[in-house]
Image (cartoon, rainbow, N blue to C red):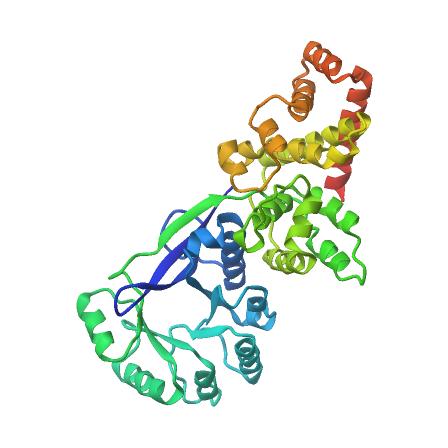
Length: 409
């Protein structure tokens, strides 16, 4: 399943990049589709911070993200770092005392606030207090009437906010905006939004709230939380990509989901689970991807069973991850080496997934032989791994039942 984010630069008067605005897209067409604003924003956050990576998107610049009234009330901006995002309040948000209180709270936590496509509504007494809280006011140079622009420009001197001119499409408009005191500029005169994309793993289980509930306990059961995440290929993939971010960086490679949780931290994990849960919908769900998803879990469980049978308890999590991610290239439509560059997996896991012979690769080949019904090959691999055929087949059946029970739940 391919996912997309559009990124449009915001420039200074010197035509240096000040920031990027991140925009929702659901295909390579460079236009905003008709979609619920809450879903658009949560998708932008998930795709930007997890699937593509905020470092790749932002190049170290701060990013403007649109927030709806509902997401502001849910305090969603507070789940992102104030050094990474500017909270952009959409023009559709009704300004009320509650919204003002939320803006005050965000300001106290160090967030910058931008007002999108701002037009002063004099019949609403809360607009002037809002201007006192705003860091940046964005003015649509094409749709905002000249007299309204002049009012907003004059008020900037009183309320000390910075002006940003939107939809600047000609040199004349740029020069005019500079003369009128604008500091930042956005529009096709500089650059059209650039579409960035990557692949995401379809989601089949939505254990987010279950895990959040466990994380909220006074003494969270890390073993249980680990098991719940391991059962969800999509969440496991996102967690490993997150743990590979420079923000949580470490020179050490990972050989288990538990290690990724520890690296990320329970508080940070809970934050991202909350963001993922807000998205709420299951996408990319079809019979083909469901089958790959099921097979990935079966492989993971059989790998784990065999490692335990061979008294490799310490390595069982590595075996599990090898099986879990063995079909990731087919799910994402990417080369395996590209995928492994995104995840800080231990070297022997990577070698097995790249086809380099080791114990985990041999175990994986045994399972693939069972899937193909190549019984002579199954016997050969069992002999090499020193495990009886009937025990291996029993493990496969147990793993199959385990996955079926998961899908029923």
